[in-house]
Image (cartoon, rainbow over all chains, first blue to last red; front, side):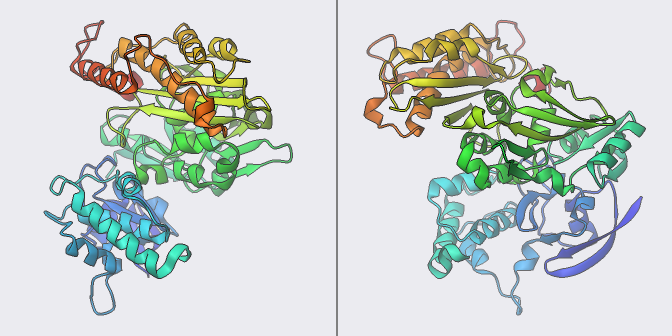
Length: 163
Length: 343
């Protein structure tokens, strides 16, 4: 049965009808066309479908859309600047060649948004733990960690613990 | 699309109890990180879900006037790890919660689900056993409280009735005050893993920080339910932390109180090895966390004097590989009997 829910998606108030049985992943991809959110394992292991709900990174494949009612959801599409420019996090991924096939990238970017949002400095070991909910079959993670280190460092320089 | 017949988002705990009592086939869902995965696998197909996901009172973590800590069953693993009350008083629970799955799972999964699944491998379960925590259940006839040590009936089974909602866990001040603890999760990989074995040691040192005044030792996956090793605790109470025999006393007594089995994850023999080794290491770490200099705590001795830590590690690793290949399986069932209850 369809139910009406209200979410703020990438900063925009959105009212839409969803099936009660639907995952947030399906809602974002199929009803809102936000195809940065990737469908991978569908059991919360690969992290390709990671989005932020009220600022927390979650696996949208095992999150019911009904739960997002009244909440704020963010996907990679929401990082776009006013003139379509990439965010510093995305630029760090490009500059460090942290992208190969790109399937894991949007999920990792959203986790990076959560990490950077804390404004804290993290060691490489800590970053490894923080990206442990993502599988990447191409890069071997080294360049992803380089990108993570770079963006964490850049943010820390600007914002310190305040961010 | 999940294969569910209906979905109901409860407005309150009482509302959830009512919804559950009206439908004997309804499943309670909170974080969803286990229930939705079972549904995806085709188990529980056609179930009705009663959700307590958005009940904010279940997410509370607080301290009452007697110093009893109350942890809402709906608190996520990351809520627990990052909570200042947890960090200050029962940090080891936050550390155990921080070993579950990966970061996203820890933002979603709840401690209530971790316990109510009844899995011996649940990372927060052994720690709650070591705290003698109380489980608060809310049903048609009001609330009842059960020690977590009496909550489990068997693998995947608990005393929670179908129409009861677990609302919180309580930890009394005398169970945590002055204690420092350490949790070790052993798995084949360090993230996105279910514990092959979990071990928690919490110690309270004497005022001069020379003796073990009180101690708690508990395990996950060392039996069909989590287990607390009271005899092992008694065996080392009052002993000097500079006495290297504390490690053998603790681990050897613990071995008499556990009952691990072989599963596709590891053999019984390997789990016994882990119980022995991890209890020693967790004890040492817990003592060190109590603010003692490393030089004042006895080193862990190994029977063969030439054994050093790296050799012990190497042995653990090779046994693990054998276990993974099924070499040690004494029941002949190296296959995947299925389900986390076999963890």
